[in-house]
Image 1 (cartoon, rainbow, N blue to C red):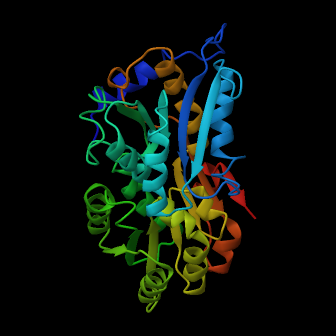
Image 2: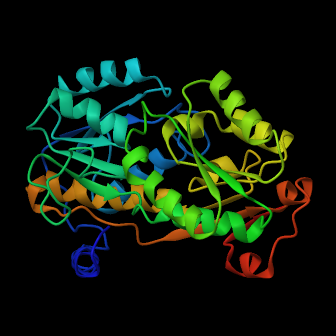
Length: 333
């Protein structure tokens, strides 16, 4: 867990960042390599989603692709082999800085270079993943923006039991290949939170649609099952399968990823990921202007969003508490 003093320090550093466009663009054309999650047509993660937010942030700081900036972008399609291939391809271009959205992409780039600056955007456990030595002092060529504290898993369980009080067993679904940190980082917190509520917790690693179907079928085999979906490239990429099976088996599902909610999940709560990609432009800008990653502390989320799918709640026969409706930033009819 992150200490209060460390959190205050990190937020204090964030408050010193520039918030307006720079007065003058650099004359030299600089190069950024970007390996994005999923597919470029995805409305949330695609060209018109997170990538657009990032490039808009760069433009606000004086960097325009095709003018003083060249941006080489690849899309991994959620494929591990493609991540490794593109990481090597992009690192071989010797860019000035690399943008790596999540844990698998950051790990793939780390295998390729220990000198080119890397900025990650939505990594859950940068210390445990071996990317940085500490949050205030990363200590190498990697820094960025942390997706969540481990305590978030307890928050998801709290919200799940608030909207579905009949839940007696809860499974945490994750892919151990693309989100290996879940076992040591999030699962112990969820297990402790479940024990405090006299609930049974279940680790539910999945790597394919078939395994997803098997896990959800087991959870739904008797009443009282609930599902917490760890936000990750795999679970988001398979969100339609997960949410449709959960609804079919009468299982309330919550996650930190709002994209899952839009495909039929019940409730989401987590950092505003678009905001984090916008903030990532600040660190890329600072590195392009001479800052070193080891000097840039890992930053925490500062904006969180809650959303509720009222249609799914109705399908599951759940009455949404007024307490959740009042806190929700969005209610999908």
